[in-house]
Length: 112
Image (cartoon, rainbow, N blue to C red):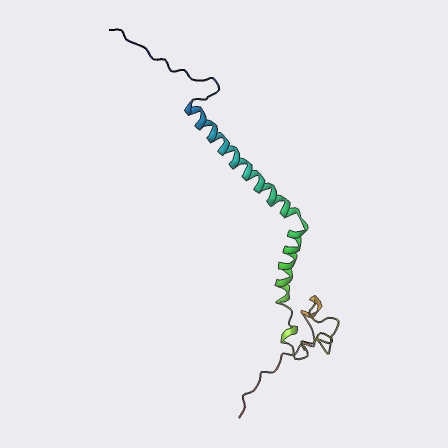
């Protein structure tokens, strides 16, 4: 009896299976790094833009608006033509924070 040897030939353009998995993992790493860099560039661009300055300005303005007592003053009326009878030019502004004519609204007395 003669023994036959079987030779399996593999084409040169086909990569072995372990090289394919190494190639896929390197693509995944490149994808993660590029996503991180893109996110970083986006955050830096947002911080330097006028939009972020406008948002921060709005936040600080809201904090200062809580100090303005006009809405609780007796002379304040929610009228778009004349909001304050005493200081119509200073109403709801930074100048109104320490208004010398501030008079708290009278609490409504219960009916008898």
